[in-house]
Length: 392
Image (cartoon, rainbow, N blue to C red):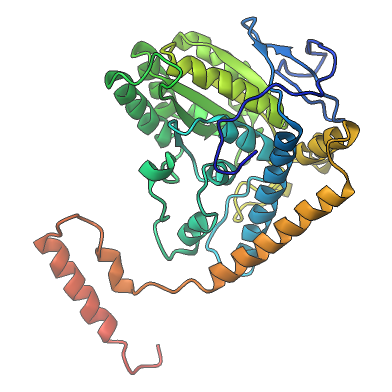
């Protein structure tokens, strides 16, 4: 699957016999098309009877695997850079690659995405240079991509705020008459399970519903809102909350890149055809810390992490490719080498980032400046000059 074309959908040639996945005791009801062992399921039925399937050519299957590996390696490099003092902070996506790559590839070119601060995989799928968020967390810029060019908004640190932005944007899409056809536009808003407890998210649900906004709410339920487990946030599965606001919800195996793609593509297509909002709960797990300032060993046990490691999204995709003889060891080695080379290049570019002049913080506050801003700039410049020639 080409990096710059997230809108590919084809019929595959190697699908297994059809089966419908039912929930078992202790296992959440979810849409799954690829088991943790790498067994392919031809189709799955959602809670409203929708049949989901995502079949690709062999090359596209290999492309999804490549995306997963590259995204994880680049994320690991960013974590290492933070640990070495080169970034101020980093929010790792480790364990959530399938939810992000699957949903990111489901977006069509005209669709708009509103991320949190962890959607590095979606950013990659939208064709944005992975150096961009590292500049933000290194403190040398504000995150330099153009949201209009890439149809991917800036990272949002305030929990849940981006859902309001996405709702307003989606209402504008509908008011501009850009829905109702295959070429229509759709919007997706990413957030975590903890954000569902925020007023912003619930207000977004209300507005998106009553105005029939072409919006997909994509919740990455990684089981923890920093240190608070899911059972401290809700008494029912998160996807069921959608019913109370008047739109459909579905839970997908967030460690299954194929199911994540299929469910997201279906929801986006419904939105672009004017069928309103929906909620996707991608049931996944945050394998690492919430951010590099967090210590997850203080609130979760090792056996829980080990259980989720058995559901690793990359391992199951590799098992599928091997089982179906779509890829061999030479392909996996080539992908690993590409990931290593790209991560080394990313590190070099981060270390070579120039430090901005402190006074430049005033440059883009207002498009036309202001007398008050000019006065503040002059005072700050004078303050900085007072250090010249000193040991400080």
